[in-house]
Length: 479
Image (spheres, rainbow, N blue to C red):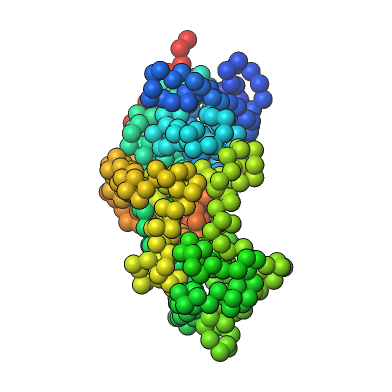
């Protein structure tokens, strides 16, 4: 019996060792970088310019001509972590699959143009990005995996999740299933649901009293701005430049900066205890809600001599055009362009009373942001038309899609733009309570994961297995 078992292991090792070796049929396995030449503009035959899109490969588990698991690039430099660890990596092990990840055009080092000046941003959109994916996947099937019928499973988070969803709709012959973890798929200009979701989390993991303190503090600060108390606000919040209460843009940037600080404190540790601790500080006895907000803000910035909260400072991250600068490498300008021309997702507070951050942050502020960064042509009408076009083409929260799994964390405010209930029997959705953005990317931890998180991960794993072997046709080797 032992000899038979050893023989099986040797045979299996031989099978795994026969995975793809790259274009030249030889070379190292495991994680490695590669580049794919693709078109700058896929839809203009007069423009035959090309650029190199960066991608990574991990074929440590792949059997010859096996399935392909692809991490779809999002709005940052390429991330390789989930090619070497996590649930997707574990699934590749179980399925004997190749792992790939691509870098979205304009991000990281995948630059179709020389710089990010406005006239060079025309090729940053979902259709061009999906065409990159289509040509790349076709290339990988033909040249690397050498199996034109290889099953392809996409995984994406954030904008990468939206692209994966839309790609499955537009190129169903190239994607056999998609796992979308915390991917907002419905474009929305005035994304008040984001702040409403933050408010819900403050109530659930902090307290009603904490919510009330923030609600009152913001409205008092907003009223003081309206009454022109520039010197007092500038002094109390330790602003580097006096707050220009006569400037609607500066006033809104000030309030947005306060909101951003609370959002960061709530989310950056990915732990509900951070919300409890923030609220405990805000609930300490003060003579007013505004002073509670001021004292909390001072502790957050205690190591800074002063704080910049004006419009010009807010815009600094968006106006640079050199891809080698830190702001472009972080993707700030590129993400803003997608917001202004395709997605929206601006965290407005105007016209919503179900959130605690006042009601001054409206769409006019973000129109001004788009125009300062890219030009006066980006009027509110243009932005609205672009967002309506995105939803019209891809279906918003009603995409025509099957073989998809949408997962979201119950404390992730972007869940307001994603699917929280099953779309149809073949496109289920899983909301994972008490978790933040993409909580299910890590390996299953049967000791520390909650039952709901384990169930979500197992559901994804089982669905991907079904998608790979549904309509499975065995590979017949030519003799």
